[in-house]
Structure formats: C-alpha cells, structure tokens
Amino acid sequence: MPANIDNTIHIDAPIDFVWRMTNEVESWPSLFSEYESVNVLHREGSTIRFRLSTKPDADGTTWTWVSDRTADEQNRTVHAHRVETGPFRFMNIRWFYTESGTGTKMRWAQEFSMRPDAKVDDETMAEHLQRRTVAQMAHVKKKVEEEFRRSPRARA
Image 1 (cartoon, helix red, strand yellow):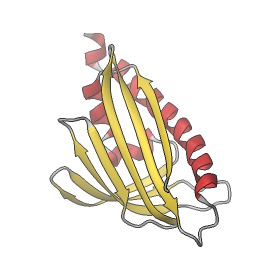
Image 2: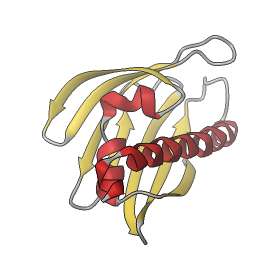
Image 3: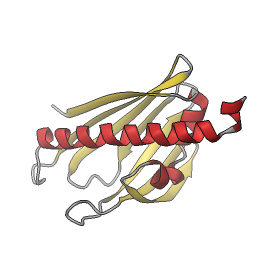
Image 4: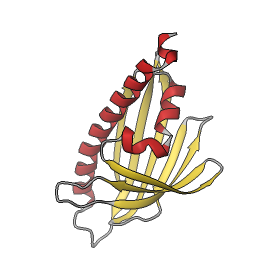
C-alpha cells in the first residue's frame, strides 16, 4: 500500500493568478525555498519534462530528478510523476485548485512508495515530506500573495 501526503492551503489571490504563478515551472527556484534550479528538457502540449535540483540539505547533499508534469487548466488540476525516481519506487503528485471566496484553495496530494534498498521506509519519508510540504506551501502562499499585492490587478 503506497504512502500518502495530502495538504491544502488558502491563498489570498484569484485562481487565475495562483494558477499562472505556480505553474510557471521555470520560476520555481524563486517560488520555492528548497529549489536551486530547473532545467526544462521537453514540452509537448500541456506536458513539461524538467530536471529539478534542490539546494544542499543539512548534510550538504543536492538532490536532483526528472519529472513529467501535465497541467489541465480547464479543470484546474495538475498531474506529475517522477521519471527518475531515485530512492522512490514511484512518486506521483496531484495539484488541485479551487476558488474559495476571493482567494484560491490549493491542494497537493502526494502518493509514493520507497524502494526496499532506500535509507528510509514509507512512514519515515511520509513524516519528512509532510514537514517539508507544509513549509513549502506556506512559502509559496507568501510569495504568491506578495506578488499579487504588487500587481495592478490587486489595485483595481
């Protein structure tokens, strides 16, 4: 049975603004605090393949992997999975965006399983990812709201 992480945050900005800003993969190093670089490898329709690299962790390790990400703007959903899985058997992430009052509810649902030879098991990785996901969602919320407040649309 795979492990699951599921988190939601409310962002005080319209859904179109949140969608645009969070789906601009090239900007992720400035949107997320943990990412060092993004290299787009291929685009086809609404699918993008990219290499993502983290900033060094507490042990000085930089993690990198390739993911495919398909955005469905009409339904405000994104489905992503790691192509290079590293210590994971698989890693799937779904993003859901819904209007919520004058803002946006953004939900990330992650499903994964660790390889038998990984240094940690599913439960340990779930605890780790839960902490990181909550922190990153808060960081993204702050960045998106700051950018929205600076935009002409916010002053209209």
